[in-house]
Amino acid sequence: EDQVTQSPEALRLQEGESSSLNCSYTVSGLRGLFWYRQDPGKGPEFLFTLYSAGEEKEKERLKATLTKKESFLHITAPKPEDSATYLCAVRSSNFGNEKLTFGTGTRLTIIP
Amino acid sequence: DGGITQSPKYLFRKEGQNVTLSCEQNLNHDAMYWYRQDPGQGLRLIYYSQIVNDFQKGDIAEGYSVSREKKESFPLTVTSAQKNPTAFYLCASSWQGGSPLHFGNGTRLTVT
Image 1 (cartoon, rainbow over the protein chains, first blue to last red):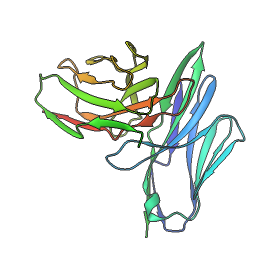
Image 2 (image 1 turned 180 degrees about the vertical axis):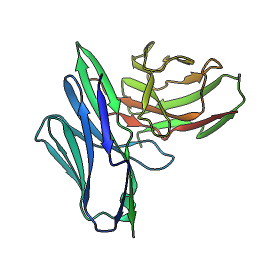
Image 3 (image 1 turned 90 degrees about the horizontal axis):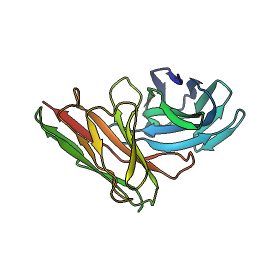
Image 4 (image 1 turned 45 degrees about the vertical axis):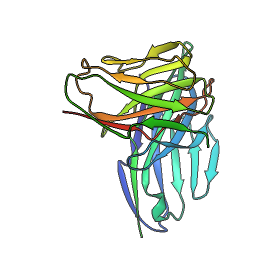
């Protein structure tokens, strides 16, 4: 069974204090790893897709990386507006059947 | 502006009543999905549809029903058979072929 585990569950940082969120996964036949940002009471907003180990994507203060077992979302010099829950999802393919499995998210709080 | 519209944002119902959640998209996406989000759990797939007039059960379809009569619309009915219907419901859409999901802003359903 596919599994996606995100850590930590919650993270509080001072404004400007860089850190990383982790998404570890075990799937059969990785077809893509997705990062989303979710604000309270809203739907997830797509950030990045990574397809193969070694791939990296950047957007403003966020950088996502991928290895064969995990992905990191690095946040550099965060601002209060970066506070949100960050979700990781993995798409796998097994005998032609595709499945998308979500982690439970990391709730990030940036303190001014 | 292209996007996914879910309505209403909040919905209150008495136990034993069926209720229908609306989802409309103008992104011209082929595939549409319904997810349920509960605290401390990853998003769980209820139903999905890859083409008009066709849909498949997800992981937690019991007590739910859907229809896909138009490409743009994918309403979800929560029936009285759903044992624990109070949750945050998210509708999503995507192109075929493993592209990322785009989400609406959700409907919070409370059943008392």
